[in-house]
Length: 321
Picture 1 (spheres, rainbow, N blue to C red):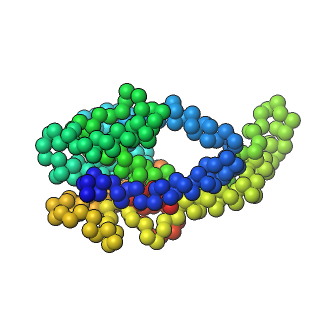
Picture 2 (picture 1 turned 90 degrees about the vertical axis):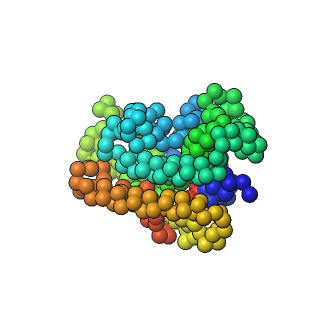
Picture 3 (picture 1 turned 60 degrees about the horizontal axis):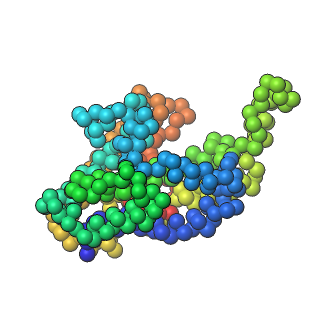
């Protein structure tokens, strides 16, 4: 019955299932990642160390992430409060459009249900949810000082925008380009079996005589390459019943029985259609060399809609494969 549950529910679809499957065959000991990526048996140990030292909820939102990585500077007059230091950065430029649309939708939704300033702080269920996220979901980081407070409508909107962005736009940008970019193994090999030859190496002359052979002999084995290709194909495939950002599946049409909320949602959907047109126009702009030109595929990973299959585009509501 809780309105925040209803807002987040579409963004959690299938997530527990895909997490369970990943633990069984992808990130498990001896699984695909350890068998086919350069760090080998240390792959998950490195990931865990990165999580321990770098992961912060307050940095998971796109604007904060861009600032942390030095790819943007604060600008109160710019959309989302940040200005890119490199204009031709497709992920950031398109991502900020998606982030802004999610932010506007979430803020309007929260303002609809929480009309008084103190209602967020006094919402017992909401406070218990946020307590559980911090103290049980991230037990090892429960005492970190950077956890956002949940006292105001602004706090709530910021937290929800981050969660929805990670489950939708962030995941889409990372996930659905895996096969289009990495399915041809020499383009994005997950490991190299030989070091780059140095001038004092015995094999350096052979490298100079036939650099192509040296490169090809460094690539993953056929078994490793086939495994990675199969996994990338599976992960990059949209299912026929995919639910995309800004859509409501007919089976969930009872989602929110509130005319005003549905009006706000339709505005969100319309904004995403506008963003799709903006991205398509950017991909035809000859000035943007990271989007168009000889040998440069258009950046479509943050186009909101897609059909089924491997399309290299489309933002599902949730982390679902």
